[in-house]
Image (tube, rainbow over all chains, first blue to last red; front, top):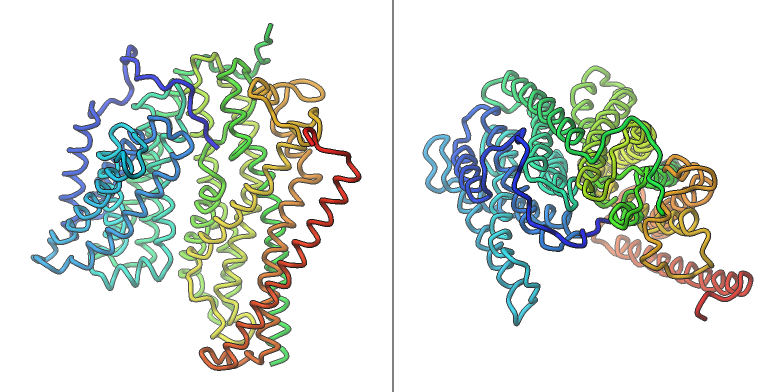
Length: 283
Length: 327
């Protein structure tokens, strides 16, 4: 459905004052988001709001990876890349949860990170194979790194969501509360949308990373609202109903702020924002 | 025994009818938002200088976006059912009467949010081609998109609810679907989107946008984007495309999906009844194997009949409507 712009150009240096510019580079964002979400995912006893904030960081990182991968001519492949990342994520989550008991100390589960690292490795290998001249030879710049990041960020996102809904990282609890109830379907499709929809929606020659990131944060807010309700209904949180309610309120505030910010940025940065008008007549 | 078969058959017909309605509205909804295949035209239009007044609903492909709405609706419905069913223990269907519409309303709001971000984002990313952001286009298309999407998601969520409670509704709880409601919504959403995309877009394009070209002609790139600009009278928007496609393209897409569901379930029913699978459901026995064999043979017969019918029909159309360009 999407068509690649004829000539994808490098981003022009931002001349206007940016509405939202934290943190500046892709690498910095990856490191910051990776560390924050990896630390939060191992601490299963944290309140859902903190996990929700870490989830938004992981989504931002995932969106950056999708953008990096899709920027070089995979115009039609943007949704596929997001779904691929979350597919990695579901497999990595099951693996991480299966290994969660190893090295566990109370509610601290460093074992789940094995799933993240293994999916990073598998992503790296598939990236190398896709770019290798004797194998698929797609020759997409930075594909290896982006695929590795996609595997890691997908796993972190699904792990954090399971941790939010069940309040623990117990394999049995996740199987019972997330997979058998069908909440995994919502998690899968919404997380995939959170990381591919921003770039897919803002695709074009004048795409700007800061604007695209606002959409990612906004969808992260929506996920927090829905997962908060799911947590209230399943009722497994050690903090009672307040945990879910606070996550819903947090998600709603994030969504309102960033949706407004995005729409205002669009109205401001469009060629012209007009109430109505006729189309330009061609000569 | 007799009652269960009749009830199963009745529910099968209800599901097929709901599938027909769902896919009809799915196709019209994607026409209003120019999602999927025709969206390439909307994308290219501004880049080849054809500024237009179309809505650019680049949420994703239709299968994924419908999976999103249906999974969201299914999850909200499931959550409400968990909370409401204890209030009416004698008749749990009363909870569904409230839960399904409210769940679908939540999904419709998600649909609106994603449509808005997609249209604004894509239009602003075409800034250098002087494509303005028309606010009346933005606001005027949101309501039709939401209402058509609501119809689709409502039908799909109802199908998922019927399926996950099929046994309870027809008198044998062993027939309940093993998957949960949100999971069924997800799978059905992908299916309805795929059929709407594969069947519906053909009619959208050929009927509406390429109708001034001879039958079967390819489209040169120079014309891409031109079709987004002018209608029979005035400037073209997608609201008139929905009205146009509602006469043929939408119902044909719905019929495709409805027939798939009908034939698929009918052959299973035939196998179950002929082999005596109902009402005890003896799986992994000679009776069970016989059920599968009869169902598969019936399916192959249906495929053969459809292929033959299609061939005959296409031959008749070619003879009647003249040769294709290039033949």
